[in-house]
Amino acid sequence: MLSRTPRRAVTRTAALTLAALTLTACAASPGGAPAVVSTRSSDSPYKGVTLNGSDRVPNVALKDTSGRTYDPATHAKNRLTLLFFGYTHCPDICPTTLADLSGALRALPARTRRKINVLFVGVDTKRDTPKAMRSFLDHFDKAFVGLTGNPSKIRKAATDAHVFFQVPKNATGNYAVSHSAEVRVYGPDGRARLLFTAGTQDTDIAHDLRLLGKDLR
Image: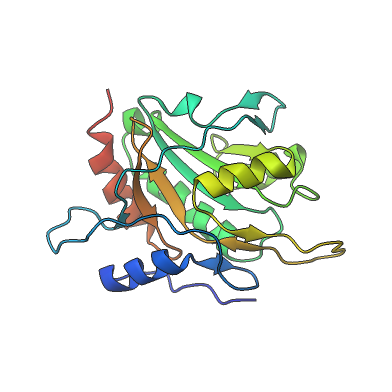
């Protein structure tokens, strides 16, 4: 297992490096195509890594934990979308990241919170059942949306978001899954705006969401 990144704001230089490599959690090595990162300036108002806006929210029909069809792109209009790929049996990165997101949301005004979608896509279809995801997410925030689907649709969503994951073949027992460890943030126009690397403090996440929330109607 990889150890968790310390709970502090990642420096801008380190954040760019980590984003380019695509952080992974819980096993194996990075892979997949990283998102294009905009040039960072010393006067950037954001704590997270700024993306250039060329990518959009994945447009793929998944299923939420109630069994309803959920297309992230359809639900993104005039909202902020926070997208995170992980799995319910993750021992470190997933629970700590979700806890940070939960803490950040609690620090925001209710009006802003109501305009934010936090989406958790379960990449381990064998164990990430709707029931397991709902129970897992409810430990952090009952408003968090758990998404699943057949492996090809989950793979498409991950590819569109430039996210890497790898589930061991024919694995049994308490196996680990490799996956990217960042949260991607899309603006109310559905375009990629920010990336929070693993270990970004909830106060920094809240700071950036307040700024992005000013664009919400």
